[in-house]
Image 1: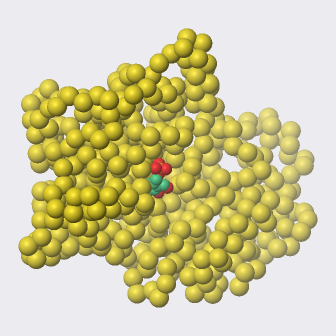
Image 2: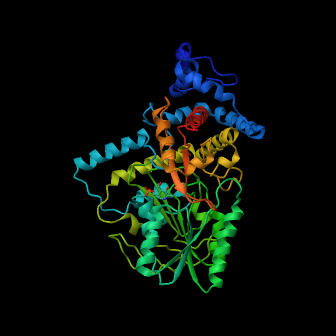
Image 3: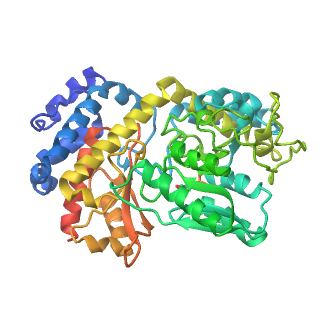
Length: 489
Ligand SMILES: Cc1ncc(COP(=O)(O)O)c(C=O)c1O
């Protein structure tokens, strides 16, 4: 939205709230103001804007809001890259992203070219992998294209020659995408899975998780168990806790373990340097925060001995491939072979999907991955402060104050009667009504998880904030959630 358009539309917009500038506001935000000023929504929502508690949170929220608004013109331009249905506000990127026009165009043009030339897809896509690998801090032979996070987790876990009795230490908040191949390895090879119960909320620090993993590995070793690997999600999809990769890698190295990260949400959200982090495997989605086409994923596979992880490379064999050259994975020579080719190439692939993913990645590189991460984190930090103002800090399942643990996912308990969060149907209804009953059509989700000491699962409400959102989306969301929580009390 440029300034000319704002002036053109100014007459139809309700007066802004005190302290809120409309400069640079897009259509959906002006609609929100209109709703506040007119009609049934005004009576329901206006008083709620002033029902706040907790002055520290208020100050922090104001600061974060100012930070977000400062760069609003830039992000308004970024929002224009997308074709999102303006009748809804899409806040479930953790499940599905949205391809920007430029990625749609590549997919369309390249698919048509392929059809016109009766093209095949027998390739390991090395040229394409070369283009995106630097954005993730690795070399092309360490970055494979997979079908999605789940497929990458299958490649990683089922490619390891497990021995009966090997123990994998993981958490009780994993996604089926990682748990499924782990369960197959349990049933097929006789591995044991040791799950750490995850604490939730804001009382944790990175050291909490580092200690939990370290203590569990030590305890198992004391019992004579052969611990071989750690597998964890960064972030967990349930509470949006970014289990701290650098700290957990210290545990991995101290105990000489294989490291497998379910990083479904990392590509496109967090600007991480995987070479510097040194995990053996990181499986991420191409279709979530990175906004590539469906059926695309990015699997990082350690293929060099770097200072970040001096352990020998783990033995690993491709399980889903048409490109297998037997090599010694433990070779430390400078000339690494292209291990990622074996994951990327399995028969003929639809090359335009990956060309399109590469286009989305190039756009992210151009905007700046760190800039996107900073914006995503500022949006979620603002949302968390606003949740704390209204519902109190104890309502958060996500961490807030340790910068090593936060990400663009926010999970909390919106109910006035706190025990309602254990009623699955009520939580599902909250999600449905947020889309059906508010003009912004908020698309969010709920997710069930175990809470230490709780009688039943909690079905927290999860919100994803990404580059097509702004502070006004968060304000509207919080007001609507507060309104709905009172209606459902
Ligand atoms: C932590 C985590 N792992 C794996 C998956 C599966 O993702 P995909 O559809 O890319 O396989 C998800 C999906 O939401 C997830 O949140």
